[in-house]
Image 1 (cartoon, rainbow, N blue to C red):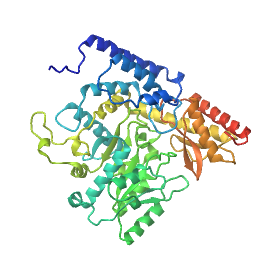
Image 2 (image 1 turned 180 degrees about the vertical axis):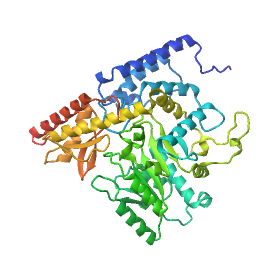
Image 3 (image 1 turned 135 degrees about the vertical axis):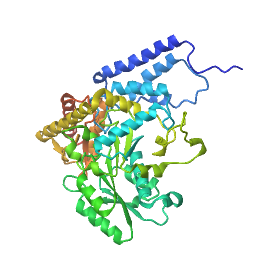
Length: 480
C-alpha cells in the first residue's frame, strides 16, 4: 500500500490558508487594546481539550477555526498593554515572523556544519561584548534562566573539583551556595537537581534596599568553612523577581574574588539593562561574574522561549558537558565538520533554533532601541510609584529600582485577603492583570512593567480599577 506524504498536495490552496492564518495573527496584534487582557476559560472550551487522541486527521480549515475560537482568546495575556502581572515579555511581530521561519527550517542546533549554529555563536559573541567577557567565554541558548542557573551550578562544581566529580559524584564534598533571602525559586530547585540538597542553600539577610548583605555573606562563608563545609558559589541577582531589587554586584564580585568562590548572576530580569546607557550603571559589577544567566524573552521582547547562559571560562563549560560518542564524531569536511558544537556546552543534543528569533530581533531593532524601551518601562514604574504615594488609599510597599512596583490597598481589616481579592477581580474584569507577592510579611499587589506596549493610560486604568474595587470592599463592611 502506498503511504501518502505529509506535505500538501494543493500548494496554492495551502498558501492561501497560510496567509489567512498570518493575517489573523496580524489582526490580533492590531486589536490587542480592544480585547480583554485575560478572560476565564469557559468550561466547554476546557472540556474540549479532554478528548481522546485522534486517529484520523481533520481539515486545516477546521483546525484554524479551533485555534481562533478555543485557543487564541484564552492565553495568559502578556501581549496586551494591560498585562503587568508577571515578568513576561510582550513579544514583537518581528519575533513572530522569525519563529515561523525557524519552524520552516526545522533546524536541530545540537551541532554539525550549518549556518544556524553560526547564528547562535554570533549571539554568543555579542553577549561577550555586552558584558565585557573575554574571547574564551562561551554562551549557549537555554529554555530560560532556571535551566541556565542549573547549568552554571554544574559548570562551577566541575571547575572546582574536576573530572573526578563527573565520574564519581560528590565523593564526600559538602558544597554551599549563597544567595539573598528573596532569590528566585529556581535556585533551590537547581541544588535539588544537582544532588546537592536544598539545605545547602544559605539564604543571606538583605539590607533596606533588599540587596544581599555583604557583611552577613562574609560571616556565613567563614562560619561554614569552620564547620567543614566547602563554599562553592555566590548567586547575585540583577533584578529580583518579586520587587526588582539589584544586589551590589561589584561588592559580591569582590567577596567572591577574596574567598575564591564562583560568582554567578541571575539576570533573568535585569541583565540586559546593559543595553541602556540610563540603566547600565545599576548592574555595575556584572562584568566580573563567572557566569550570567538571562532571558531574551523578558525585557528583550523575544518570543518564548529564549534563555541564555554566558560562562567566562568556556573551557570549563565544555569539560562539563562534552560527551564522546561514535555518532557524534567530528570530521574535517562535510556535514559533521566543526570542532565545537552547541551540544558540547549544554545538556541538550536536540535543540531548537532559538537563536534566529533573538538574532532577528537584535538585527531589526538594535540594542539602543531595545534599551530605550527598557528605560521607558522603568520611567513608567517611577511614575506609577508617584501616583501611588499621592493616593491616600494606597501604600507603596518597596523601593522601585527597576520596573516592578509593589503596593497595597490600605485597609486594616483582612488586608491580605482584600488585596488578593482585588488582584483576582481585576484579572477577571479583563481591564488589567496584576499579580501578588509578599513584602514586609504582607500580601501586596505587584505590577511588573515589561511590555513595551504599556502606557501611562494603561496604568491609570489599572489604578482606577484597584481603587474602585477596594472602595467597594470597604463600603461593604469588608465583604467581597
